[in-house]
Picture 1 (cartoon, rainbow, N blue to C red):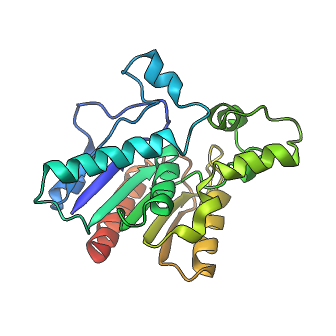
Picture 2 (cartoon, helix red, strand yellow; picture 1 turned 90 degrees about the vertical axis):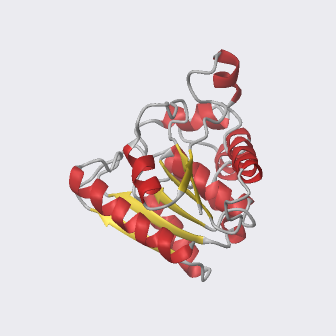
Picture 3 (tube, one colour; picture 1 turned 120 degrees about the vertical axis):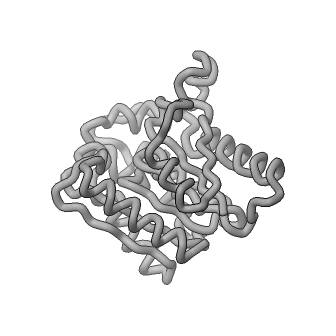
Length: 229
């Protein structure tokens, strides 16, 4: 099986240095792919600046292209057992990938994912992120037309297209991507009869990086991947 591990930000990167998450997944017997999609740092200004205004499109297409290239290059990989793991913007990408390419991605483990930018813009501590990455001017209060554009850029807008299984992890003290993003998405999946699970960490914030939570999340992620792939 192949696990596609996507970084958040989106303006960060997966370096060549050791990564504990990737190493853990590899130790479980998974092949791990960590693509740096357009918008990632370290590849020049043109690549970095290409993404704002195009989230949910360019970044999704880049991850799909990397996934398909890896499957083509390594025929030993099982095309029917591909998962995506990511948090924050990586969770946003994972939710989009599950909706846009249900034929390619079997399941996903998403930490504090952005799922509905329209619902997030008024309650996040980074409303400018919503405006810049979607490419809109956000009024106060946001107009219905602006909210419609923000929602159209959100994976929640295509939730009916999700066919695979999704594990969500949410930190209840997250002010960056409010807990309602994962909770509402989970409820919407369940209402549609889709396979979804949710982990709730009452004392964690956006990073979900305390030792106890890190260990618990990746143990649960491994269980989920083993069951679905």
